[in-house]
Image (cartoon, rainbow, N blue to C red; front, side, top):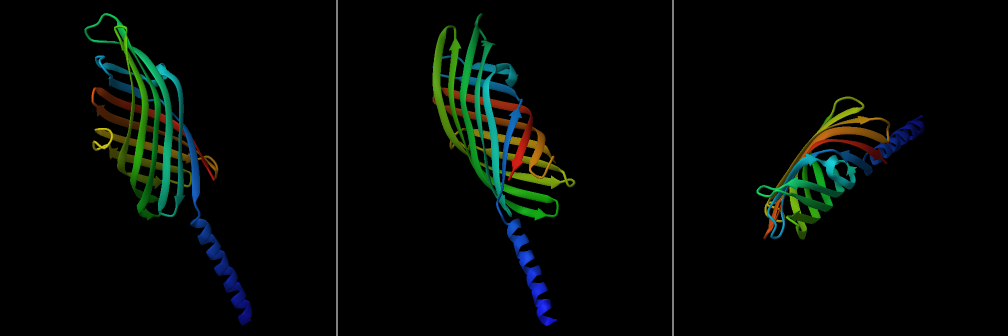
Length: 238
């Protein structure tokens, strides 16, 4: 009888350890998404006067690829995103009778880590630290004169992320970060709010609203970008 109890206890302990090991395994998520912001730009390139624009990104979009990813284990997570954009627009310029044009092609890539300073029941609060690289090829044409520049910079970011599990399938998330600090750009900040619905154990559907602003200046090159608008995403877990 005693040996039988020991066998049962051993089986229960092994099952418990196996469950704990599974809980501590890395979990991965890949999330392609579509973001439809209003884009406000102020581009001062070379000898040309500033070219300003405010329009929906879909009106000026020539190409895009947006994807995010995350790996999580316990309180720790590592994640990032990659954006490729190819944009162009014609805009009036103050003091001139004709239109100016601008073209922007490039990438924004972010890599960072987070640690859950609070993780209890359905609530998780994480501190974030990351770096974000911008690599942009920009042309402005004013009164027939074209000025071109490649601007590349990397910013440190710090922030916080809050997640609340509303029920078995629905989760709300809020995130905010700031960065730049004259390391790369003068300043940038970002905020988003998201609702995530677990369609299956492996697939999530999400929608939210995101604001991103960056101010960069180097010599005669000034790039001010503001992107504000909704997004939808599909997350694949494995």
